[in-house]
Image (cartoon, rainbow, N blue to C red):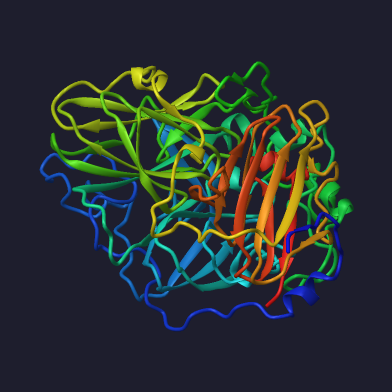
Length: 552
């Protein structure tokens, strides 16, 4: 029976969690990346006497990008304040994992259990969210919902089974910390990988503001909200918090927002940077308004376009690019000069091969593409859609000068994949055809002027839950009633983009254009409390998030 269930209920979150959440798999099989595949990680220029592809990261291990840890070793992930060098000598202080930007790749095989301890050496609490993984709920990294915040000086042990192969990543889910330097790839290998390629490279895209002229993401949020307190997970929980307990305290937010910590002492970690708001950022591909934040830099694998990462290969080599948008507020239009791409995966799940010249990737989306390397030196450009900035890396298969930072491949303006709605799933991951049992209809609301983003005209309330039942096929209808695009992310599940055939590509994050809607089906087979939110971090922290709940 189909049910249009739009009412909201507010049982305690602790009771829902206590009703039975799946246990983790047993046995530590891998903790960090192994050395079984070639040319992955954060590649740069190999040493002159090092053959391309001779080391796991394609350039020879060094102190900046140390060799990955061996499988089976206990791995501690340290979140700490550290300097980051973005290229051309630009160095800023930020929050990172292990002092690296991006953080070190974590790699397991599907079915393996990942065990990792987060050691918080930051001045503030944090968590880790494992984006896109259908993991057990108490490992999902949402403060005050699935776990307590990890306070400064504390550690938290994450342990879960990675069930599905694909390209994923991890980042904080605390305030606007994701717009600092804490992000890294999580690759789940397929033990029966059907693709054949000579090289595999991870390409992480980012918009960067932290530390530039004293700016911080907290400054940006305060400017956007005109000093109003955040409404998402930037607030401190009220009172002692156990997993799933507590409510968010506005008073604590207000204290944090003015840059003063306990006892009203100024915090050295709050910047007082210049105004970072922008107007006139428009994109036809995104349906109009593209964004509100003027980022000074855009990065590929932590490097600016005037000092880019270089990937080396030979003409004719077949290359797999795993492209991840780790940005806080920017979509990117991506193209490789002189090449067409074949899209093979979206958000980790295989699709029927789709050829395109360029693609638009929203925040937190991932696309895997195959290319066949031509002879020469080619710019891999990530245009900050609607914002006039760009990031760049270089594919080098021969001699030649590095392309200028302003390089604009013609492919950027040819055939562009904007939405995964054009894609069809590989038969191996297509959801079984069946009618839906429950309809959840949610409306994205708010606007740029008041910066009052919410769902159904209300900001995030941690005690408002949308109930489903285990075993149901749930149809999500997300209506974008705003004048701006939003990348919508569902935790703990992948959904199928529903069309006329109700059998679209599998996704966990999808762009919803203004005055359009997302129709997506998922099977309620992973009990717990699961966030659904816009992955524009400033929208979510302003209130555009909610919680789905069910128990087993």
